[in-house]
Length: 144
Image (cartoon, rainbow, N blue to C red; front, top):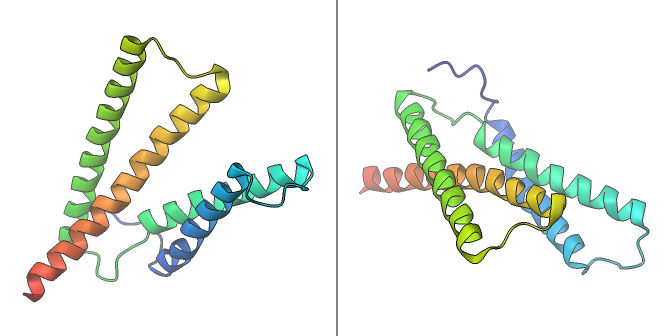
């Protein structure tokens, strides 16, 4: 597999810092736990920067090379992508089935945007969890 699209391994460390930092700041700001005296422009800038730092952190973690990048790692990447794709499809099927049965739909364009954004984030977070879980689990098996 051609790994030219993967970032150098040092980006993984940057992603590990950006990912939780952006997520926590974004959630705090969304919940209103941040200073409520912020004007609208500053709040939008804070939300935008924190969300994109979360997103870039997630992508840096996912698309960074491992210290030893070989066919085994590529196989784990492929399996993780496959499981994440299946998970996303199940999410869509169950969501639309529940929307049909319960006659619920996302509220306007904002609700639909949040629904679609959450499905995209679900895909990448599932990939990250499955890939790293498989790597850690297999390393433990090799050490035993």
